[in-house]
Image: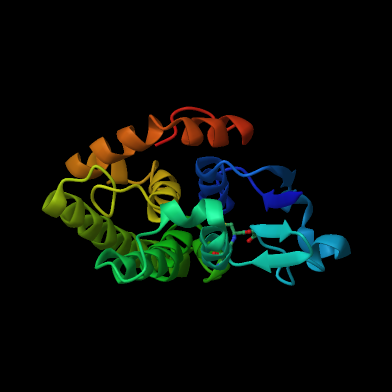
Length: 213
Ligand SMILES: N[C@@H](CCC(=O)N[C@@H](CS)C(=O)NCC(=O)O)C(=O)O
C-alpha cells in the first residue's frame, strides 16, 4: 500500500491533502524529526537529507514534494487535479506549483528558521526581516491573482493540486504580522479551503490544532 512519511503541518501536508482529495488508499508514517532522522539509518535510506515528505508506492521511493505531487497526478485517479494537457491553464499550473515550492516555500523557511542560515542573533534578525519582506510581496502577488479572477480556487474555477500546496504554505504565516489570512481575497479563499472535507480529514489525521490558518 502507498505510504506517506510526514510530520504534522510540514510540506508533507500538501501531499497528504492531495492524496485525500484524490481518494487514494494509503497509510501515514510519522517521522520523528525531533529525534533526528539523520541518526536513523532506515529513514536516511529513504531520504538522504532526512526530510519529509517521502512517498513509498509499489517499490517506488520518492522525495521532493512537487515530484511526489506530479507523480500522484499521473495516476488515473489524480488526473482531475491538474488542468487538461494542452489547455491554457496547464503551463500556469506548472508555473505556480514551482513558484510556490522554489520561491514562497524557500522564503517562508528562511523567515521561520533563520538560525539554519545565520549564526549570530543580529544576522538571524537580518535574514528574518529580509525574508519577511519577500514573503509579504509573494502573498501580495497571490492576493492580486485571486482578485484578478475571483477564484473560487487559485487557478480559477477548478480546484487543483496547487491549492493544496498554497494552503499548506499560507498556514505557516499564521504568526506573521501580516498573515496570508489577513488579506481579503486570501482570507476568503483559505476559509473556502478549510470547508473541504479532504482538508478536514488531513488536518484531523495529523492532529493539527485549531486555528488552522
Ligand atoms: N524541497 C523539499 C523540502 C523538504 C523540507 O524542507 N522539509 C522540511 C519540512 S517543511 C523538513 O523535513 N524539515 C526537517 C528538518 O529540517 O529537520 C520538498 O519540497 O520536499
